[in-house]
Length: 373
Image (cartoon, rainbow, N blue to C red):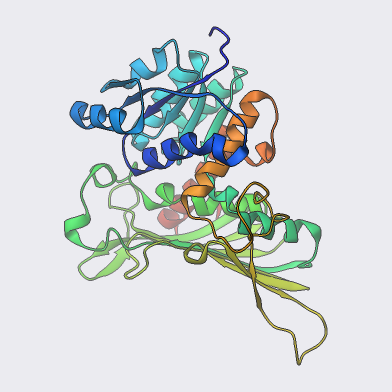
């Protein structure tokens, strides 16, 4: 590619994740106080009319119903792959081969051969290949990780994570690509954010035992993995270091809209976080004073908190979409050759590890025994 001062962006996808990424790209300069020179070049979608309307609204120069045109466009430097899971591998591999940077929505892929090919393609080129796990860029979770790494919580005794939604609870909602293919649409892959957070916060799982379930009538039954819709699961993981982690994930959890949570308990303290209270961390540090100590709410909005230096006055809370903006600050910095928190970006190798954990979960549900990750 010819060197340019502007960063040409091509987006594949026109859904709500595409809106989040485009919004982040348009706000980069305002947050950081420097000109990134983002050029919204072309957006691709399956419906030509819808894609054309999105291009006009979002500020793209061009639109297309063919993702290959995004990859081949001479003005595109970075391809943002937000298409359905089946398109992640072919479009990302083609973009890397064409010399583009790639940001691919999770999961990286849902088949081992595709994941391996994507990792190989990323390793063969000098360009950036990011698996988009934006919850790494929640300030409260960055702070939680800092507390854990500093030793303030002591030795870990228990780990509990979850991600529960209810959008697929009713038959009328069970349509679209997630239900066309039980593997591409598996909740184990689709809500793999929680598996990436487990690795990023705590470390590598070594083995898993799990039960994947499918909706049946008003309740659930064990899923025939690979055949039935994979709607929810519960899993135990043995972690490096010896602690056991429990993980609960569902898209049929009635009443839960986005209840992602992290609970960590150590010998010196504990913490709790919920996505439905994004900016807060509940923190307990053992002071030895039984009459006064307890969990306290830390509002993670101070300038000294992770990722908060460029934001507003303390107490002016952030929203979910700001996690995507934080991710793009790091992506643009990494493309430029540095930048704060660029080391927190999930690579394609990280995406492959999340896939390996998901596969261990699904494999254990078939064999009904502990499986190595």
